[in-house]
Image (cartoon, rainbow, N blue to C red; front, side, top):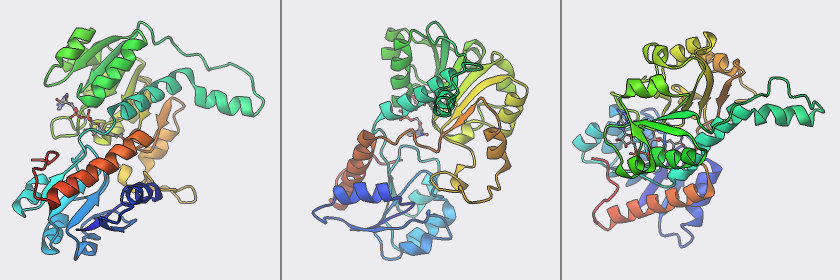
Length: 329
Ligand code: NAD
């Protein structure tokens, strides 16, 4: 099987090569992302392996099909960037890694909460510069606060378990309720109620037409003044322009995001010597109460091991004509 890996970073290659020491798979690593403009590179490959910001739309898929690609192996959980219908039409299977380490993402959400709240990022810089003042570093106790969780699948559930340990009250919204979480004390409410009653709102649902921009000017109006919003799921769950207005009007007290609506032009790259043309990210970065990380919530050793192993298992199952347990249908 000839496999073309797109959007490759050094660490991706390192993990794939480690797990392919017997050279069972024939990998070619491309640094470029996969889009309709780069899809010609797939000529002669059976499988393409792609990531969160590759743009696998109808145009890309038509070229993949023409080039003989038979499998799209996503090395991530989300598949909002793949035109599944088009893949189906062209007889290309799509597999993904549905769960590799929900704790990795849940723990990063908590890292965003704690950093925004207790301002350890600011304290670190201050103390290193000999500034031992506590001015403006005041935080709040998480104990007793109400946390609203939107989407209680694998990651949302792991997040609930951690926040329960902090002594938070947990409200949740999901299309399906988890009995395990209910037994743990999580209370499911309509989404409006979750928005109205929460001190902290954390988004853990997938990006779908139904969830796009669930945080917008009207949902923000329902929220408590000074609410903390955390998004480690997908950028377009938040309407960025509305969030910027919410921050300017002090409706949003804290915003922690690991994902961003227009991240594909920025994230995973070192642009420190470039002129960044995205005015939204520059404006977001201007707020002292905004913390942005570059889609790193998944990035732990344990998660990378699982992503690599499950991706290889998915490819092997395809090669052996076995059932594709992680197929997106
Ligand atoms: P999951 O499928 O286990 O859970 C998703 C949950 O969202 C399900 O319970 C589902 O019922 C619920 N849901 C679906 N539509 C909803 C809606 N309209 N409103 C409320 N809930 C809804 O997925 P997961 O593994 O928990 O991952 C959640 C998301 O996290 C993924 O879709 C992906 O976008 C994101 N993610 C981000 C990173 C990262 O590094 N930042 C890593 C992995 C996953």
